[in-house]
Length: 310
Ligand SMILES: NC(=O)c1ccc[n+]([C@@H]2O[C@H](COP(=O)([O-])OP(=O)(O)OC[C@H]3O[C@@H](n4cnc5c(N)ncnc54)[C@H](O)[C@@H]3O)[C@@H](O)[C@H]2O)c1
Picture 1 (cartoon, helix red, strand yellow):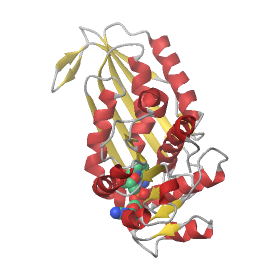
Picture 2: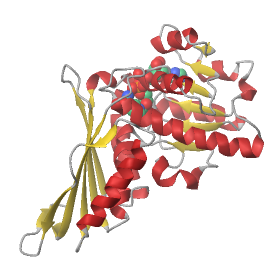
Picture 3: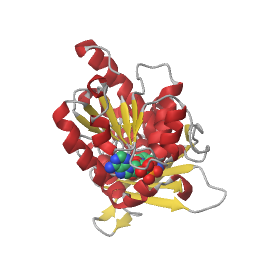
């Protein structure tokens, strides 16, 4: 496999893959800045590099052996990269919010997309919160889901900063199409605090009618355990909270009027493994761990069909 984009996300992903004994083999790190720290680290760690972008990757002598490419550049660069790579038949896991392929949140819907040529890994906020919305949706009708992701400003590279609007749109869309909510909104905060703070996520779900609080809490706790199995620093910050709104005490929502039912509030924290940036950057881990978990499944799936991937 190859990684395009030698910034925060690409470098963290490379280190994770090199440190794991899974089926993936790091065959190339691709950048456009020959002086980038990510390319220097890749070279130091024995991974073939090119600073020639996607054209440099296509020109590498062993390109034909590469079956999977991760894109960790930016949403706009992804469109260009995919236009050049799609004709080669290589599989793409897109870590930018470009939304070219179907949204993939491994614990929720990876099985549906094992053969997708281009799989979009949503966003860091989406990987942290869509599973929770899905867990609540399994118990009741989520009429509205709102998520707030707060990440340390230091962990957001220029690629992330260029993609804030795409983050909002892609995450909001995934809350509906993958999480199962009827309406959704995503909010992102780049927190400039120094020392940097851990990634935090708050999920609000409005559940229609009489909601079974115990069943919702059980479903959320089970989902947190499943995500935690591939992102060890992912955990509930406190117990799931419930607020009930009755006909006598409705919640007024400007767009839709009076709501009666339950507001479920879930607070999450993600501590990073410190592979590239320090532990505050759980936002790198939640994305790169999800992409790695998806790629490992896909690699096994590909190997069963066409031979072992590189
Ligand atoms: N940082 C996060 O927390 C985070 C989490 C999830 C997803 N993302 C997404 O991942 C992407 C990268 O974010 P980042 O924080 O790592 O940004 P970054 O700026 O640190 O890294 C992007 C890298 O891609 C390289 N690049 C740009 N265009 C390229 C091209 N055409 N070909 C090859 N390399 C190219 C840049 O030189 C840079 O090294 C963004 O789309 C962002 O939205 C970021």
